[in-house]
Length: 421
Image 1 (tube, helix red, strand yellow):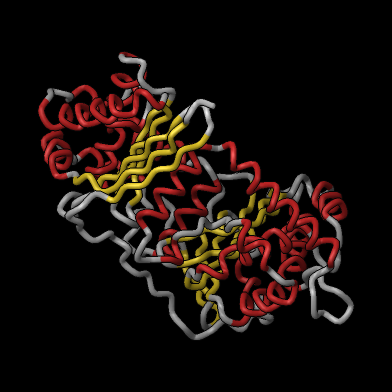
Image 2 (cartoon, rainbow, N blue to C red; image 1 turned 90 degrees about the vertical axis):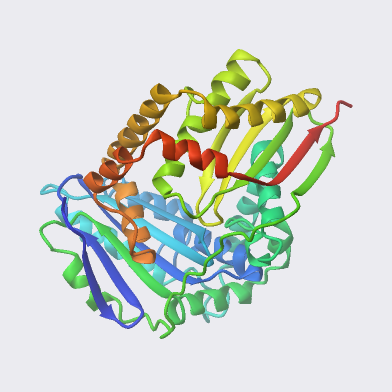
């Protein structure tokens, strides 16, 4: 495996570089990192949208799109994510990088720097262009309205609010909400932009450039940044033990109900034990939940499980008829019992194989490689080497999974109940 190189061109800036020729593209991402704050969440998402789609040089999305199209389909994307107690505003560039397109790489990088350094502001630089802001505000509002029909996502977000009672900054998703959007003023976005350059720490990930033609010059182009001296501090967000189950529900005139159950993980088991358990329980179409609850008994339209290591939670979610909610809960409990007592060695081996194959498939994705670099920058204990990950998965035993299943603690539930009109 090619080892990443880490550069520190200035205080508050890190460059994590994987100099590989595995891909025919160069991927570079600026990740501006700051503590997650509830009141700033939607502002940062709106700012990311503004920065990625126009600039002083390309004041409309159409003009920017035309420029990118002549650069062999170069792509620029913006997003915000919440990682533990941190908020990341990210702008990424993916551009072809080979002998034929080398002349275009510098032009593509110039566009990215223009978006960051020369945002689409008015003549005196005090406000964002009103038309651009109105468009992005409308786009974001339309996103929020579209989510009203995504009942699974809404139920999952409601469970997150339930779990985040002691951490209000985590009650809002990374894409924000309409309530905050309505209150955002133009000058606040300009202030957020200035804080981005002057206070946020910056982690730049680079995948590609194996001939070292781009990365050594990056430091010379970062003089406009004045990041704060504060260091990134990741906080432990593991949920505290509770004597009582957290529970909430809402009733709406919808056809399908949503059931979301949360189980607390225990610290004595490794992440790889939990990964295999999750895959066996509800990770794919061979899992217990899918086969027993959906296929065999026909009690759910959909059912699956996933892991949230940040909070130490295994989540099970199902789309069901309202009349079948209690039956589905009983069937879920039965599958957890099966994990503890039944001979499921074949399913265990399948889960190991799926996790290994997923890892290898992800390694062929330039986006996944960039995400791994970012994770390693934020959490030094993260595993980058595929062989090391595979060995750790292979070393897990079925009895360890059985014990982990026995140690799961039912923690919270949310029900979005569909009442027929």
